[in-house]
Length: 223
View 1 (tube, rainbow, N blue to C red):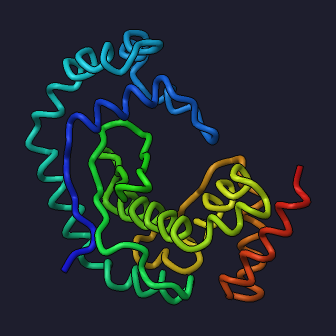
View 2 (cartoon, one colour):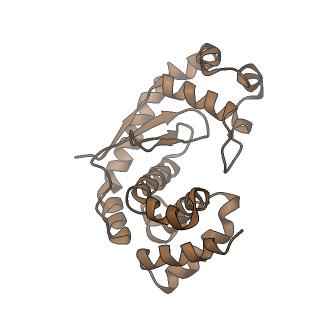
């Protein structure tokens, strides 16, 4: 039984364009990946005002049969590695999988957001299959961290630094999961030093609990 279900919802895709154009991300300006002409039309608009504009601009791609073909292709590819991925995640974090079901929605823009309570995330329609698989692994690792580790660490170093740690920990995908999809998880420029620290410490001692303690101390001393 597949834990990850793959779907396309044009309204979620439309929302992602609007959100990418109008809501600031703490890690990257995703508005720069939107077609400049479309960005001019939706920047500064409410979601309701922008939705019809976005829907009209995306109608061709939203109605393309390639959407369904891509969904089936990614689903088949993920099925081939899903068991191994989850076994690795349990082995590394020493925790059971955080949810019985995850939903992956296709988006046609670069930003791939996620929703913690509803446990869904997005993957980019224009990504090659290996990159899509890496994105899936990346987002599920976030959910695992939120479920079991985020709250306690937040008490020690605050929300912003804990969010940084959540993102930087995905460097472990390169060390422990890369054989599943063969491409690198590069992370955000902001987390370069933290990712280097995590990689170094993990190679010395591949113990997730101890790694989190080391990272917490590292971030406590970071202004």
